[in-house]
Length: 377
Ligand SMILES: Cc1cc2nc3c(=O)[nH]c(=O)nc-3n(C[C@H](O)[C@H](O)[C@H](O)COP(=O)(O)OP(=O)(O)OC[C@H]3O[C@@H](n4cnc5c(N)ncnc54)[C@H](O)[C@@H]3O)c2cc1C
Image 1 (tube, rainbow, N blue to C red):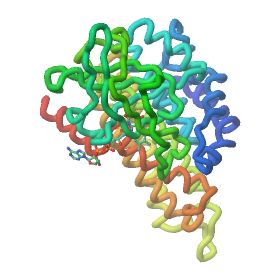
Image 2 (tube, rainbow, N blue to C red; image 1 turned 90 degrees about the horizontal axis):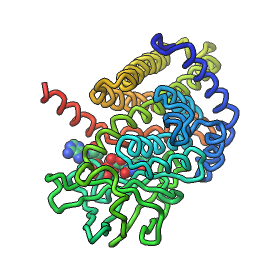
Image 3 (spheres, protein in one colour; image 1 turned 180 degrees about the horizontal axis):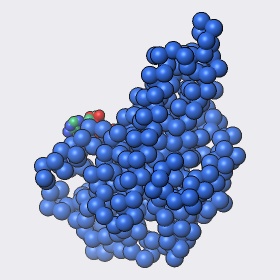
């Protein structure tokens, strides 16, 4: 229970929990085992109106509340990170367009909330995702079009997406505001690589993108030329909270599963929970869950009130994702051989958890960002 969340929001949480347990849990193992994109889950999220949360009504939304979007993501990740990552990508897409998009671009959200169209957010390049200034994709202006050449890597949804938000340099000199964002529809010039097979989040349709002189209309630039860094930073500070909420949901489930095991499994005729090593692991989890809740929802409240929240969002992302990885390892440890066996929730979530400490910026990148806040003061 978080005291500053209203009873209405807690009721909403219970509703999403019931929905996730009934509709998403049954397929969670299937997406992982078969490395299958979770189309059925996406359809269920659309039908339940969950994809329309966080979006204003005029663009097909049901409720613009970003707090509800966080709560929904937390509850979905508690049962299936392959589905909750769709909330993350939706959030990147919706935040980019709601903050900087044209009316035409914002109207595409109507197709996203129904699940008819699938979004992707393409930033990372084969040469690296941490160093923004090292980006090589370049968009050259020719009459009323930009011709974009380059590659991206690790793009979630690349294999199934209809609409892409793609970042490229608009000048050889990155520092002189030479970085911009584009709205790109799936097209012949956008070549998609093979599925990248990963350790976790294996249902993800993740791949590389390659484009050479791909024409994009001038009107499909997002915001203004040179606004890329501003767009990237404002969007990521919002969407990092969604990723953190998902990490919290997975951590809560790891706690529930390993506590259940520690209560039932016996050693020397007593439950594992009687032993101090196991008590230590479980109390670490409980401590991190509570701290993560406060970090995430405090940052989210600041965001809702229109106050600066970049520092709080960075701290939340760093703390929660590192806590998830640590506690996932400990959950496996508590369950011994069972935590390392296919078919257990802990084994699956432990593999899924590792992506969180580098998705939307690595822990090292978060520490570098924090240093910037320190230098400002
Ligand atoms: C499951 C998953 C989904 C993803 N989805 C997307 C997506 O949809 N769109 C997208 O654009 N990207 C996506 N990514 C890519 C992700 O954002 C990058 O992996 C991340 O930004 C790190 O970039 P990199 O992997 O190229 O590592 P690099 O940037 O090469 O870094 C490698 C390591 O070195 C560290 N490092 C780098 N530079 C420094 C430095 N200056 N100082 C200290 N340490 C440094 C990093 O922290 C990291 O630990 C996804 C990744 C995963 C795993």
